Amino acid sequence: MTLRSARTDVVALTLVVALGAAFVAYFALPFLGLADRAASDGRVWDLATDTAVRSALWLSLWTAGLSTVIAVACGTPVAYWLARTRIRGRSVLDALVDLPIVLPPTVAGVALLTAFGGRGLLGEPLADLTGFRFTFTTAAVVMAQVLVAAPFYVRTARSGFAAVDPQLEHVAYTLGASRTETFLRITLPQARGALLAGIVLCWARAMGELGATLIFAGSLEGRTRTMPLAIIDAFERTSLGLAGAVSMSLILLVVALAVLVLFRAVAPAEARR
Amino acid sequence: MTLTFDAQLRLGPFEYNAAFEADQEIVVLFGHSGAGKSVTLQAIAGLVTPQAGRIEVARRVVFDSVSRVNLPPQQRGVGYVVQELALFPHMTVADNVAFGLEGAKRDRHAQIRPLLSRLGLDGFEERMPGTLSGGQRQRVALGRALARDVPLLLLDEPFSALDESLRRLLRAELLRLRAELGLTVVFVTHDLREAHLLADRLAVFDGGRILQFDRRDEVFRHPRSRRIAELVGVANVLGGRVIGHRPDGVTVEVDGVALLATTDQRPAVGSEVDLAIRAERVNLRRGTVADTDGVNLLEAEIVEEHAYGATHTLWLEPAGAGPRIEVEVPSRPYEVLGVAGKRAWLLELPPDDLHVMARAPESG
Image (tube, rainbow over all chains, first blue to last red; front, side):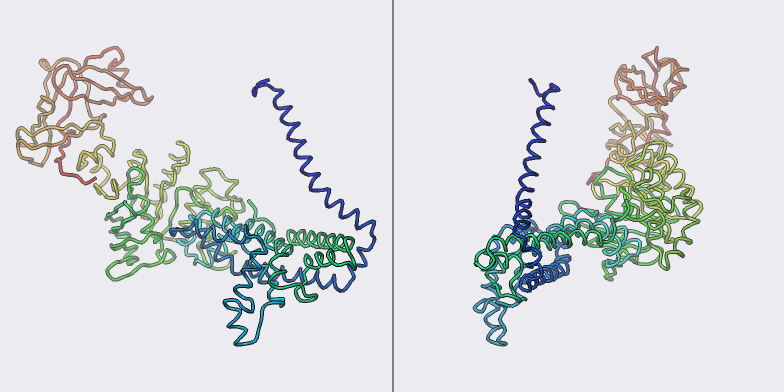
């Protein structure tokens, strides 16, 4: 049998389909397992109405939302600049943006401590002057999420802006449009898809943030204990055990899925082509 | 003067220095890619800042390195159409064309209606650029640049992506628009035929410099140097030495043959010059030098030929001394003369069509 023969395609197709199916099954099974356990346990609804779980879920939702807003507000100018600048050492800058992505979140948490912790670079003088400490505050949760999740937005937005032909902007300038108007009417609509994708990635990463938050913000119920931390807590402590962790995971999944679906529905409709 | 331009700039190893003007006419910037044509348009539009120079648009200084004037593109009042057109893909035809106007959307759309119909875009208002043909997109780009009633239109190879029949149509349309609106157009192209058709005046660019800026026919018939002659498609550029002066011109020795050329110039006897003659200006005659009246006659034989449909290009090698000559013959005379069946001809290089160029030391 040669590469040219028609049978090659049959064999290749069979192989590809088998691999794809195995892949899908591998992803589906853990979720099925969760659902199965939660169903046999029967306490999902009890937990969903439990105040501790509710407060953790609510904390997760709004801190991840706030982190995403901060990432968009501060990251969009950076992403645009990265996409347009021609300065030397741009590749180094790009790598720096990617760095938090490859960094283990625990390292990010330790790094945050060295900067903003009670003995940190900025944390120590701040504590001496005002007595304010970031650690164990909700602010620390948001800070950890921004550090870990914002690069996902910046990276995606940068590619989106880079894909917008600068000539569109130049032509808009010659037509009298200010830089701001050009950005809002030409660049932003063109990069819209990438920005939305970046927002989703960033929010999802912030929702799942665990390591950096645990080290920098701790796990204080009602203040820093987000859903992932609550699940760890439930898993490690005996009161609820695996069953509790399972149910809470399912709740987190369903809520996250609902938010993502809602976001895509509410986000302004794709520009006509 | 709608445009006076004088700018110098350096982009890495590329040095640029050019000056020209335009007034209610089409000035074609002609040259190979990388010669500095597009940079010129960008400098006029304010997208590239020269290191030195002065640019005036409609008698208004938009750039002056001495008095430190540098208006942003928004205030330069020029229409700029780039090669890729850069239509805003997320906007309708009407929104694209009306982009440069101010006011309520309804007013702006009403304002562009006459322009759209002038450009043959009636009924296309709500179409998206992606659904248009190449020619229609071209018209939208033109309309968008014209909608603001600008005195100056900058066109950067706007027709290069279109097929030949469409280009012919749009060139004719541009000439009509120029006549109707009294536009001043600076048109960049590397297409010789396009340059010839559109240009009132022609600036020949090479290596970041303008080698010659003149009326079109002046550039085509009297290129100032061998390089310009080659760029504007003069097939025969013959190097020679002046051997004598005559009342109406000079005698130049080229490869052992004396040729008369009509000229006002009087280059010194013994000096080196180039003679230029376009392939279509060379006559094919029957007979021999001995039995024919006339000057600049050369017995030669066709050694190679190409048929281009409307014309035939022939290369002839002289029987004795003399240069190799390229001749272009329209297909009808080609058939009437029976060129296909006869190889030996008498070439005539009319002295009036032999253009003398001093061999100046050239930077390009």
